[in-house]
Image (cartoon, rainbow, N blue to C red; front, side, top):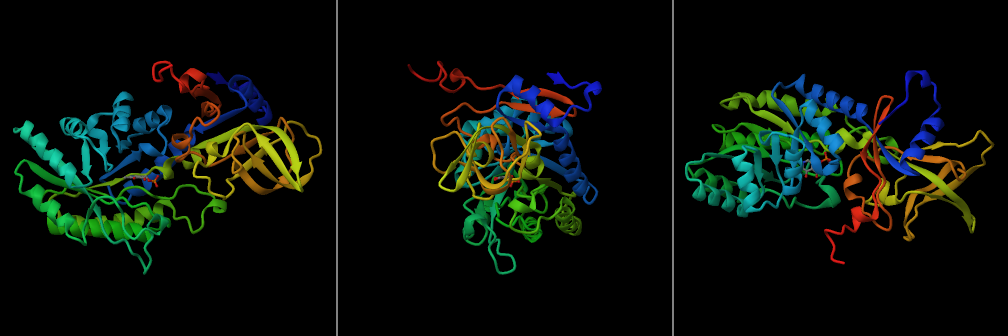
Length: 426
Ligand SMILES: Cc1ncc(COP(=O)(O)O)c(C=O)c1O
């Protein structure tokens, strides 16, 4: 760990970066753990102040760096997982099995048995999973099990279907409109040892709008009233909330946590009287908690001109900041190595790979960097680390920043971490 003592309070950004560069190399992520605490507290307070029975299940797939998930767990977040790998990771960092929410479309019998043995919250996605729960009861006839169902329904809001990629329906969960949901309820309710305790409605939308959550919450409450009023313990509205996303990369209004909480909690407060006990409200944020907690730092290696365009080559790649390779420029800062005079130009920032499309920024206007400067890309905390492949080069280290303390969260990779002697056959 390095700690910049208070006597060095006035170290310049450039001096701090030079120390980090000496220790960790020319490309690294900095994870701002204080920002994570702020995000969690602000999201949690928005909901808790409006509806008391609230649980935040952090979506592991969004970014499962151990330093990050351990911090969220210590703040009180449950682990929302969608695979056995993520389930085992939650256990490995010390999460109680009761504090794990197991979602996702693919669970093997052993995974379901483990989750049921551990009293995890488990949301079933389709009939083949119901079959596995029944098999568990055949093998454990004394058990009483609790399950939730992921629900799929027409999400059209104000005449528009907001699903990602303009899909007409979600591929997840039990469909209400074609009767699958009702059939699943009947099948489960005919088993005396199974209790349906929850309904889950996560939808990935392109709008992330408040109206989407009004629709989801109301629909889940209506279905719960109709089918499982006596057994309901939770309503899980899923994730998909906007976080601190800068205007330059969002295409629409970004609701605040209070806006989401207002919409969802007012429905929960109106509907809770219909249930034997006030249902627990579960939210499953991913992006909203972590998007602004990671920055990617990379050194400029070269600047050249091809035809009339400037290309700034950095010790990084598009994979490090936007693995989906969308063409919007991420917020970028420039830390200069010297106070010399810089030319104002339009330039592209390009990566070390051999892909033509390896652009970290396109047509950016500003001071043209020189080799040795740092470029810093903000808002790279969601779906970046987990999608970053060791393509061509090892992945950069991750440093946790807690105030003036800097500590490693992931070391610099070496050949053997990628082409592991125990994994590959030589
Ligand atoms: C079931 C479930 N919950 C939560 C999330 C988190 O979504 P987001 O990062 O958009 O909040 C996802 C993401 O796809 C998901 O599939």
